[in-house]
Length: 127
Image (tube, rainbow, N blue to C red; front, side, top):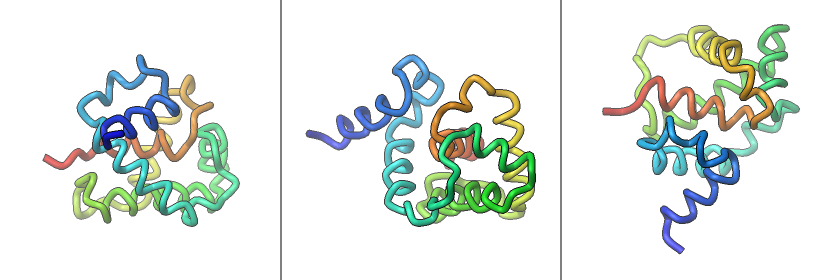
């Protein structure tokens, strides 16, 4: 089985095929990021699993919100899978994710790690 096939299987297990259309250009990057994020699983040992749980944690200023978002952010940045501006703050990153959660309530049943990862990759692609 090729890497592309493994990545496609992973991606389609998380999202129905039609919802992958917006990230079509990011499929391989998405897969690589997904693998690295799950390998870094110890960083995600909080009780936050779904985007609904993340949204509630962020709205009530629970520490798990910041930790959860930052763990995904740091993994993607360290692996050079995204290229955010040098001067971005933790609060700005959190605000971006909370805004995405507010604007996309229909996706909040999905795994929070996946959504945060997709939104960050789309926001700061490396060119």
